[in-house]
Length: 124
Image 1 (cartoon, helix red, strand yellow):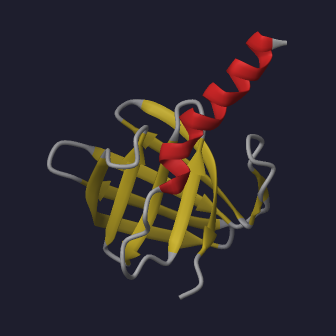
Image 2 (cartoon, rainbow, N blue to C red; image 1 turned 60 degrees about the horizontal axis):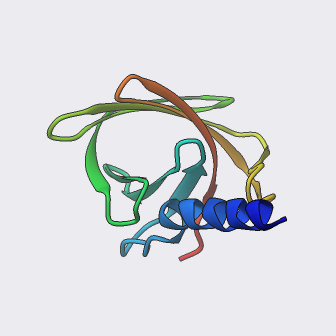
């Protein structure tokens, strides 16, 4: 019983960083994913902040190109050292960790890793 309680506490703490970072001014879209923990925020139409692990582990990306079709949008972003490919699909997504429902499915390729998460627009 003790081991289960400890494991649950560790899981809660590990998800804290990616989901609890303070949102930058002007943020209008947010996505989160787990295993590993990550989140991203559209700060403007041309700027994205990508968070991994701890809330203060942030990388700023600038938009290189964007393509949209009926099912969603694809983006290519660049930081000083990395390229991030992002696809946002217009379909419902359930975050299996938090059980929260989002209105977008998010796929990204970062540093050679394929990640999946859920996203939604933020009210201003």
